[in-house]
Length: 290
Length: 304
Image (cartoon, rainbow over all chains, first blue to last red; front, side):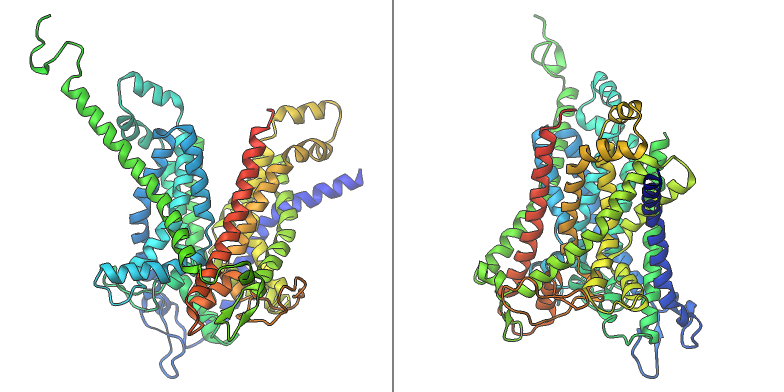
């Protein structure tokens, strides 16, 4: 039947469209960025190694993203320092220590937590968290790295918990039974048997959390302040790669060098998250092959 | 009965080793319980705090009214309608493509390099930062396709963003249809597509629907992708007007409105941004909770 053949073609094409979209995203963002690579005022070395970001300066234009890269990675690292123990602990509790009823309830709450829009998280960082930080620390302003990291941690925890729980659930029950037959307590079972057995899955969970934190825009835009410099402490205001694009894209004249450099930062971000997600995927696939 | 010496008590009492083991076990249990609770407290605390702060402005009137006096007073109607437009158009585009892609991946694809690449592409599409989606939307839809700053550009950008998650949830729904159903259908001579249309899809419609509803809340909450493709700070429309926007016009959106109120508008009455946040958070959580309830109901009446 011709109709059916045609339909299968449409279905096949929809399947391939995912590849096309990823390529299209890269190509269109790269296409807008391309002309700046040949411009005299721009150098790739400066782009990666300079901490000076003066895109609108009249006679001293600098496009160095090192401070932004440092901002992104420092706030992600701090966020993960909060989110990883909390997320993995939550995953262990869900899969090993709690009854089925409590587990269902907790999973629903986690799902709702993951649904809170990033702009609401940013708003919370801007209003609630910044007041708390000013009150309890010596920070002059409440919107800083610590604030952004706490917000990012709360956003990343649901991902880490749900993927981590899947990883723990994938460990065969025979492992648990063997451990219990030897007289191990639940806790001994967790850290002697389950953690080593599920370590790839847990690593993937953490990587996906990192991916989310690196790519997050609105929350860090509103919660981390706007200082473009290398942070010296966790109470410093910072700016990340994502927040920088969101803050400046509206002001950069279309087609200007500034505008194109922002697209180039987009290419950089795309590449970073691509590598992180690829890493997570390879790690997960390693688990499956076993 | 002779005394057992150092361990004390009767022969069957716990040894010190067993007691220590138990203490550590209890400690671990409480520690992990505390960690799990530490995830829930933020949700409750945040919702409670926002509600308290928003209370003075919060009413049905706030949703239906338009912003007044340079957005410092009044309601959020234009933003609310704008979000509804964006969400519906983006899902109307993303759902067919996503479902068909999932059908391909789950029903047709063999394990070869092309399909592994598709899988990888779906995973990476899901991980692309929202601001990069915004850059793509700006470069591809606003300029290259000449849609301009419009609802159309913004919706298409959102559609590509929600696509990978729709693919993933649809695949899950398709995979939960037992293989025996398909085999029975093939055995009576049905083709692959006939099997999909009359057996696989009807048995997974509700699962697919749940996945799509969950994406409603995600699309409604996104800010960065629409900020540079079609959402504006302010647009005057009639109070309570549902057909306020056209496809080629810009619109307001709740998420964008919250960002504007929180960072750009001076002298705004304090409760207004909080109330905006509550309207956004409330709609998102409501849609999500109903999808979850729907899913739970479906599971309870599943026969296989």
